[in-house]
Length: 130
Image (cartoon, rainbow, N blue to C red; front, top):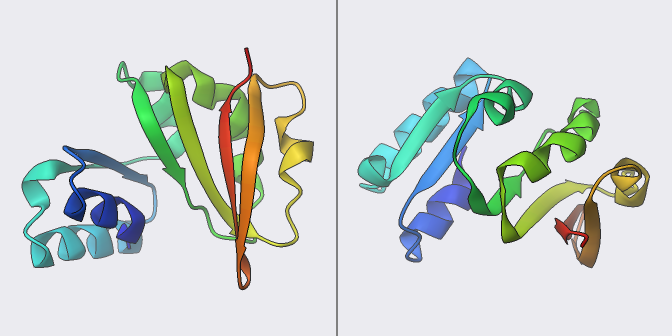
């Protein structure tokens, strides 16, 4: 639905890129950006996130990663995300309680520096490990 990115825009973020390969999700993001009059600040990329990471030249300070909770395909993304991160960037990774993020961060340049639990949702905050 783009809710996290739209919330960031509504609180002052200058821009937000939305990346999703699911056409229904893209329609929801487009609809929600229009409803909130934030279309001009949001750019939508309809493609797999791994392909997006490999093709973009942009660097990001904040990355929200909110895959379907039961989808484990995202585990490979942690090896490539550092390519698009600014030096002090933060990844905010929302996931279900059955995911052990530490397992996915092995052999990457990322570490989890904080974790919060909100009901069935767990939020890990990740950064580059220097």
